[in-house]
Amino acid sequence: MTNADPREAIVAAARRTNALGINQGTAGNISLRAGDAMLITPSGVAYEAMTPQMIAVVPLEGEGAASGPLAPSSEWRIHRDILRARADVNAVVHTHAPYATTLAVLRRDIPAVHYMIAAFGAAKIRCTDYAPFGTQALSDLAVAGLGSAHGVLLGNHGMIVTAADLDKAMWRAVELEALARVYYLASLAGEP
Image (cartoon, rainbow, N blue to C red; front, side):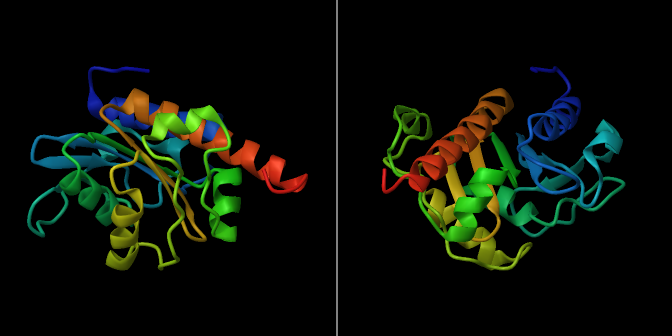
């Protein structure tokens, strides 16, 4: 999936989230660090219709306005604040994957029930409390819930994964959904 043009890479990754079944419709968003700014998917555009020219640019410092033909995702604050807080992160992927979102609705952390939890650099994937979408409160919860890990569930919302590059972030998104599925299914038989 690696692509020399970061805007094309974001569009390809966004479309891939839908193809993989870890996102749907216009939900979710993807960003990449670009120097002192970030590139982020636009708000309300179906991934199949998205073009690289639609990707918004948002400064990482200050409260500067986004540039581009369309408004950035309503979750731009989460992406900006994670990139500000984490020098090791260059890519952020947020999806509404079914099993991860189910656990987020149940407000359940994902404990170390499978060895692939190690891919996230923590003993568990935490689930935050709820805050309305697009708010600074949700961003604050996301940053705190993530801590130094590479995955977090947003209460009643979805998942966020991070990585040094977009390929690794996409891999983590798939792995987090797989962990959520295993944990959810195992929970049906009792406490794993």
